[in-house]
Length: 432
Image 1 (tube, rainbow, N blue to C red):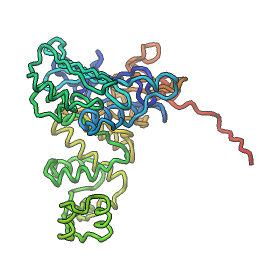
Image 2 (image 1 turned 30 degrees about the vertical axis):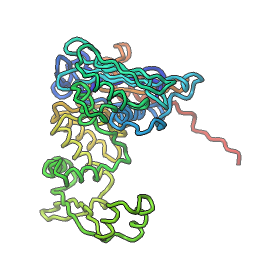
Image 3 (image 1 turned 180 degrees about the horizontal axis):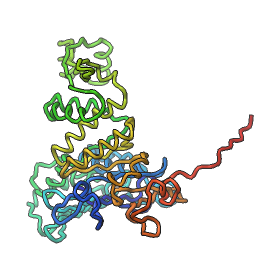
């Protein structure tokens, strides 16, 4: 589970900002919001509010970038990272970016931090707490020679030959964890860490993410139960009674084959097999609706955007319930009615045990309902005068600003909590 995530010099984030899932002393909604694990009280959810261009989506993008940095190591030394440091300052474009994350995995706490610029990883460190903090490895890069240097901690037993192979596989633009994925070696702490990034932390879900295709493929491969997803859908006011998935053989149009030949090597075995077969298998999905005890089927692509979005969310919720998972979601409320969004949040909080959601949202109605949020689970991003992002929690405000009896929605709308757009007047004078 995620404990803390910190970002420095990434996009609009200039100075180090930290988002924490560690619960404060409040016992409000303790049973539904707080997970007790290895001596920590960990929140299931963090919701980030802020005006457009305030940097809230960047928090999620940075987390996703870190995941890809670990799991998708570059193949060539000349490959560069696709990101921007903070650009509204003469110094920061020449300074390194730093991402760090603290997490629990198999009851062990890990702290991982990586420092980099567009061409290379500069510094990298992994600690574990068992029970006291100890070094797993420290990595530095010889920038002039483009070589990686790795030193393991005294508690890590590793053969010299394995260490040399790992160094050789860790290019200057690879993390040590990425190099480990290329190395035939068994180093417990590195395996635990890479497994956490792969199996616990999911890729970023954006409004344009094709969740319905993702969930359908999970169901089709029996990685997700159709019954479970249907059960969740039935709890929403959508009249959905079943999910119908059908596989059909379709002819491959010549233009598609020609396009594949042009993009790939024409001698590619898979292209030849497709050409010989002349057909491909397509998966079609329909949602069954029961209206006045009569069943009707409607292709998913003809459903409303809200229904398609919640079909995807129902699948995500089934995953979150079945196995420990963290899912970052940008614009959580996208295409969903506020009541349906609240319904999803409540289902998540009540039915999950070791899963987390970190999400951005503009839905202010949540702030008017203390039955579904805790102060330490609400975060704000505010654009500073230098256009940098300031990240802070509702729990950071003292009683002079927020009391237990305060109306949080009104406080946010009035600007007491910041994180709202600073709009100009409504008059526009154009040269006509």
